[in-house]
Amino acid sequence: MGAFKFLSTLYLSTTLLLIIFGSFFCCADTNLNCGRQCSKSDSFTTENDFKANLKNLLDSLAENGPLFRGFYSTSNGESSNQIFGLVQCRGDVSSIDCGSCIKNSSAFALSECPESKDVMIWFTWCFLRYSTDNFVGVLSQTSVAIFNDTNYDDPSLVSYGLSLMSGLASSASYQNLMFQTDVLNAGMKGKRYGMAQCTRDISGSDCAQCLNSQLATFRTTIGSKKDWEIYGFNCFMWYHDHQFYFNFSTSADGGRTICISLAVLMMVVMIL
Image (cartoon, rainbow, N blue to C red; front, top):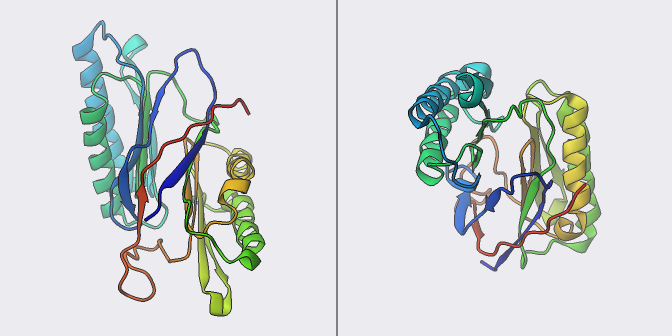
């Protein structure tokens, strides 16, 4: 596959967080890590208490996430050792896959960000976030766009594809799970599949704002591509020429595994 380009929009904060979307393969229905963000190493004044609270938090997220239809937020501990956490599974995955993803992402977080108090982990099936700051319910429009620089779509379909995703951006916020999919049927030119989802701690209006902001920010860079994905702190958008949702692991022709190879990281920092 050709090289991929990454673009991100970030809010500046008092603590600069390290954004990592390294080289990896992300198959549409294989639960692989798609990226991580770890804060700088923190010195824990009461390390054992913090680690115990973190373990309890992650255990609670793994236990309750699948029980609450793929979304759960909670906190553990008190004062400076209090940790806030959230998990959001992709809206089409089963409760078993959701639970497995949360456990895998928790283990990955502890392995890759062992001394960080602010962590975000993106897997194919789920998103995990925890922090000592209470972020739950607070909209953040930080996002990363991933696309194949060589995979251009038919020019006549570009506007239709963007309209498809614009419709999803507007309608996803009204769904019970804040998860919506749709298909563009282009006849002989094939189909295009779209998905939009928000974390369920934010309001419907924030969800629509988050998705529309992603689409507006990356419109010129993703508009002509057959395959792209946007990962954010509160919302996500995927667009492909193959059906990637509802646990389909191969394309319509029955032979091609759906994968995205990520190679090049480029970050653009801006205040929205």
